[in-house]
Each structure stands twice: as structure tokens, then as C-alpha cells.
Length: 206
Ligand code: ITT
Image (cartoon, rainbow, N blue to C red):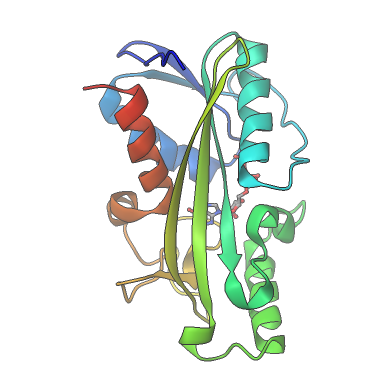
């Protein structure tokens, strides 16, 4: 397709209502000189995430924001897929925290299900974090980038940096959880940073 690029000064609507994600996306976008606004600042509602894949849910969020605002919009749909429990919580990672967004409870549920599956040793607790970014244009055109990081789930949770399931996930090649890494360390290697690097390569030419 005729690829449109984003240029310094262009406005990009970041289509997330999750403050943890927004902090990370802001930090990733900042060096590229785009003007960023958010669906929250524009007063746009959270569309129901009725898809069954990261791509479908990212599309729902990005297209809703781009068509309502008339500006390009970037959405992230993400989650942690834990092998021993059939890839759960996966696209339902946010749902497992319930309306109260209780990620301590969500992590406990992951742990309970891992124990029920007999997954105690680290090698049985493999998982991967996935981020799919969707850039939608006001005419409904969409483009996608995916980043993944493999690792394993620990118990008890460790660290208070980051958000969501970060305190339970140790990325491959590391000893600390995402929750124990600094923001800069996580930005250097996370699933979201990997997806963003591909987005930046294609859409934010130097
Ligand atoms: P938006 O849809 O408004 O962006 P959300 O929290 O509902 O916010 P998702 O539907 O993509 O976002 O759900 C992803 C969930 O997966 C998110 O709520 C986190 O709990 C978890 N998650 C995603 N990326 C994560 C990360 O980098 N660290 C920890 N948890 C993460």
C-alpha cells in the first residue's frame, strides 16, 4: 500500500485508557517529535473490546479513535500468554483484573491455575508478553506491528515498577521481573518497545 509516514509536528492520538501503557507509549514517542494527544483528553469513550485476537482489539480501539477524531490514532492491544494454562489470560489479560483493575487478584489467579496445572518449576511456567500496535487513519485504513518477549512467570510477584502483570514476569536472559526493571530498562527490551521499534522504522523516518 501507499505508506503514509508521520512527520515531526504531526498529531497522533494515543488510543489507550490505561495510564501504565500511556506512560510507556509517551516515552517511546517522545524522541520522534510528534504531538501526542489521548482518547482521554479528547473525551472519547472506551469501545468494547469484542475481538478474540490482539489484532482485532487493537483495530477496534485505533479505528474508533481515528474516525472520531479525524486524526491518525495508535492503539496497543497486549497481554501475557502463559503456555501451561492454554495461553491464558492472553487477550483477556485486562478482563482477569475485573472492573476494579485488581492485578494482584489477576496474578493470584494465574498462580492458582499454574499450580492446578502442576506447573511449579520455572521451565513449566513459560510465557510470552505480546503487544500489537495498530495505526488507524481517519479513512479507516489500518497498519500493524507486533512485538513479543518470552520469559516465565514467578511467584510471589516481585517489584513495584511498571503495571499489570509486570511483577510476575521474568523476561528470558534476565533475573529480575519486569516489575523490578527500571522504566528505561523495560523500554530497552519490552514487547511494546519491540512493536514500537518496527512502527517507528516504518512510520517515523529519521
Ligand atoms: P486500553 O485497551 O485502553 O489500551 P487495557 O488495559 O484494557 O487498556 P488491553 O485491553 O490491551 O489494555 O489489556 C492488556 C492488559 O495486559 C493490561 O491491562 C495489562 O494488565 C496487561 N499488560 C499489557 N502490557 C503489559 C505490560 O507491559 N506489563 C504488564 N502488564 C501488561
